[in-house]
Length: 597
Image (tube, rainbow, N blue to C red; front, side, top):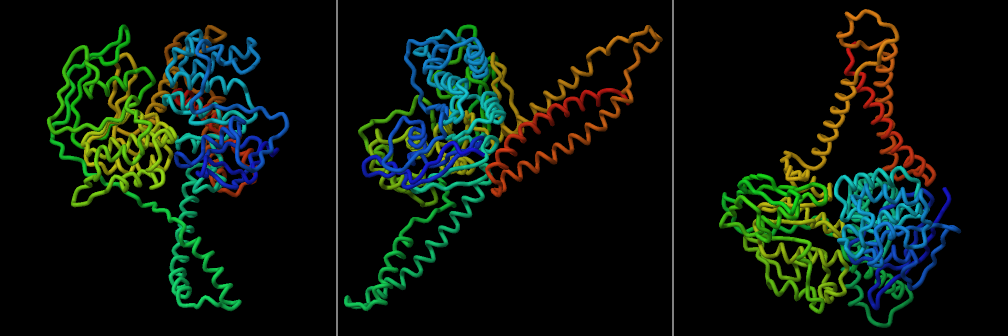
């Protein structure tokens, strides 16, 4: 395939802090690549460099001539006086009827329907969605997306997945949404310790190969350390006046020392903070009501929360998820009903409003202001510094001022301040936004082993699958349903129900009128499958089986890491086509299956 971008020996630093050094990679037309790194490692900076918004220290960037680049920034900016529709054409884009129609369609999919609303009146989440629509309607050749799923509800996220899979745009994307990575991207770039690593496969393949890389690295450092101890003893024994062979061995010693002093990766980190005791009575909601004008949030809602329960809350934006949490925390008052919280309950509340720090404080001092030492239970304790290291704050970063932290690092620090107080009931409102994948893995492990109660609102499907044991589904207008399973199970149930409803609708449609009057005595008999329909039905079974086999083969090939760029592109294009054919033929098969043979 045609190369569109080549990066050679790129280095970027801020003062004495090097983000990445001499990194090189290329992108070909049609490739869809995810960029992964810890917060503060330079993901957003790299996107800014590639979009031309930021400079770099050294290296070369070579773009295909006339390449059109679209960039969704993590925090977009528009003049406050523009309307939503004007913002979509603010950066010099042609404003014709066709583009306006496309803009309105995409904005509607993203739940932005007041096109005359002023940008200055939008929330941060609404502004991000307007910027996403702006980026997509420009139809760029090369699309840079920085956390595109932040502020999207689950339906919007799945719509964006399908949209990107159907296009042939070249994509480089930063996201913490691992299902999104798995389903959209066919390659992964990882920045780790200032170095770039490339993986030809989706997120699941990346996890496997990254672990192999880490194991190999740790083994190399361990071998170097064993040899280093021997060579260090030799260096101490040998006199200063050394012959040629000894000088060669001395030079090799210093090279060995560099390897031996590299850090190893501890992939088994587990943070077992003891939750304080929690009694049998947690909280009881009894006939709660809450409305904002005509908008119903809670409508005669009752629920008894059980000990050690881990509940996920999902629903479209505006259905009242955050309001429900605020009522539970006593921040909002219900219009009617009662909420009885047990005496032993100690809440740990992570909210969007709580992310505020003194900018001039150092990271370590923010934590020490809460506690110098954290009690893990069973006689185990961690200092504030050790606790921060569990959440990937290096000793160097701990002595940075808060104003120097990235958005994701701030969220990670806020999370530390919530968890270190030993709560027994965690209430987490969108804790996954802007957190890197490494931090999410630590948080998932922590919550799975947390000996207390958890309520979490999140649009991160992978996170919800790992952490919760059931869902409250907010459907809007006070309609709240309890689903006994995780998000994937809920989605599968919802899709099966939708297929069943479609089949019932197809079966209930009246049969076409016959050309001749015929025998009216047969009018009320069930319609039988015609010979042609029976043949179609049998063929569909074989076609669906063949398509399912093709889909499996495509997914395995895309994860293999052995494909050329051309093969990778071809199979990436074919996969959504096969998915569409499976859905189409399955729906027709269900229609025919309702007819008697």
